[in-house]
Length: 64
Image (cartoon, rainbow, N blue to C red; front, side, top):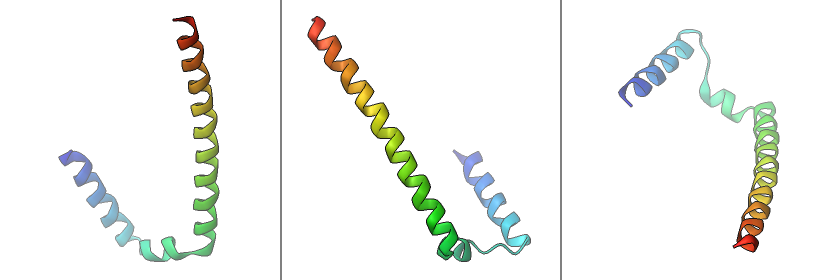
């Protein structure tokens, strides 16, 4: 856990060293569209997996 925090701090310092603004990246319209697209894609994938698991669970219940 401590290692993760240290690596996050090192990563933030590296971004600062190269002049990358996290706020500018977050508020960028292009980045917002990309995040929206990835969120939709993730949700669709999750729904497919959940549907498959539900079908499997129902099948197992029908056996017993």
